[in-house]
Amino acid sequence: MDFENIDIEKWLDLSLEYGLKLLGAIAIWVIGSWVISKLLKGIKTVMSKGNYEESLQGFLSNLAGWALKIILIIVVLGTLGVETTSFAAILAAAGLAIGMALQGSLSNFAGGVLIMIFKPFKVGDLIEAQGEIGGVKEIAIFTTKLTGLSNKEIIIPNGSLSNGNIINYTVAGTRRVDLVFGVDYGADIKQTKEVLTKILTDHPLILKDPEPTVRVLELADSSINFAVRPWCNSADYWTVYFDIMENAKEALDAAGIEIPYPHQVEIHKEA
Image (cartoon, rainbow, N blue to C red; front, side, top):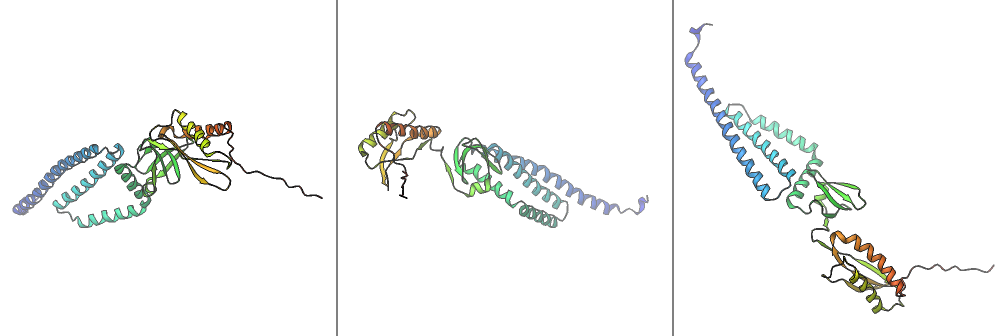
């Protein structure tokens, strides 16, 4: 190597220029990494205080961590003199393409985030949504699993779930059982109310407060219909429902109160 032809001054200038850029990039990376770690700890603390689901905490923390690191890498590359405009454009284009390809999945993800943040229901609640009724078994990022009343597993995409009507039967702790019993027009209204009321007051799972009610609902074509409205704990709903249906039939029969039903009359024609 011909050391006499080496421009020492130019070499020193380049070394100083790129050395300072390298040192600046290293400093930005170290400081940026420290700031990111503090930000992520702050995000986790806020989510923990907000009682966010653990799965949501982990996912959002990882998402925020990757986003901040990508920004930090772009800044470091810019400090080293690398053209980052095209790099950012490539990332944006890739993000747009991925977003369009995963449109349905992103909708479900967004729905899962909304459900976990606003908490219209929690695991163990009995809900009705998207034409299905069941107990909430699991709330995941993309789907929610229910256990149906016949013990079948129901999986509902969170996008549809978050955009539809949700009825939560558990959140209030108590439910009203709505029943209708029709009796013959020849039945005594006062006696019928007494029989039905006694069924409600004698049942151990029916609450005293709110007080159960028995009222004439309508005068139908072939029956007097009574609205029977007891209250019970949400967990006892179906037990109360089935018990009252059975007990009402037995009590009305014992009291001689007829429940009307369609009759078929045979007409014989003479030959």
